[in-house]
Image 1 (cartoon, rainbow, N blue to C red):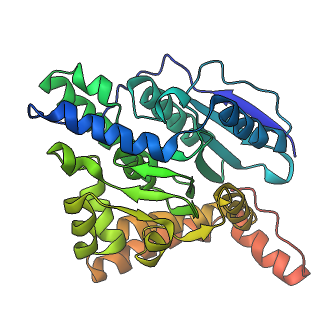
Image 2 (image 1 turned 60 degrees about the horizontal axis):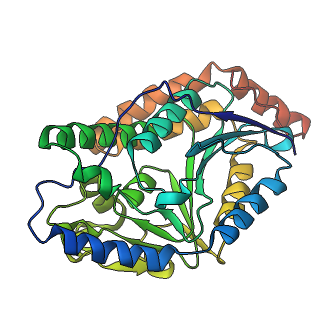
Length: 329
């Protein structure tokens, strides 16, 4: 399959970070402990890092390099046209959610939302043994209280923008998804995890809590009691437990989450894009309504698909006993 690659523009400035609040005097020791924990989970030689990175790119026959970019945006072509991949590649900091990282991520979201032929978005990491290790603690140490408050709000806003994308989104998770890194995966429609993935919210170890959406999204996914347990204790869970409690939708062999995400995307691609878009809106917005209000909202959403050319194409294809050719019209 062919591949077109684009990078996010550095001029898109959305400075986003996670609020780690006013830290106690023992913060440095806690941070050192947390850093060792994540490093042990994520460490791998630079040679191995680039070997894994290049293995993914060779599959798509691309010769594009990162050029110091932390978020890479790939538009697949051919039979996979309509699939877009965000690749997180901040190798020096385990995809920590620093300012540049979030500027690029926010810019990529705007770019994808403005591209009409995008059908599915996949988010993955090529940093070995880590999906996203959470906030950039070194940056947090340099922030004033006002800066922290502003950047956490920006982070929350960006994750909401991810949640509100009109196309289905898939997080392909390998390795550690911790704190803000797990908060990044929660807004996605689907989360697929490799067998060695690990999940957790260590924020309470720093006398704070996950404030970029986890306290609201997590209970809706796994229930109040389980959400409280993960957030209060800060414990980490493996992929099997994450699947058992509903945090992830599917568990694959190690390093298999991206392949499964591509497979899922191909299951979605031939379906009517307008129907999927309106179904997502009906589900996401209706979820917070009372049952009677949802009926009216569903009716309004369904009205948007009745007059489409795609609906007529689906009926014609059924009559002709052929595959439909949906164009999003």
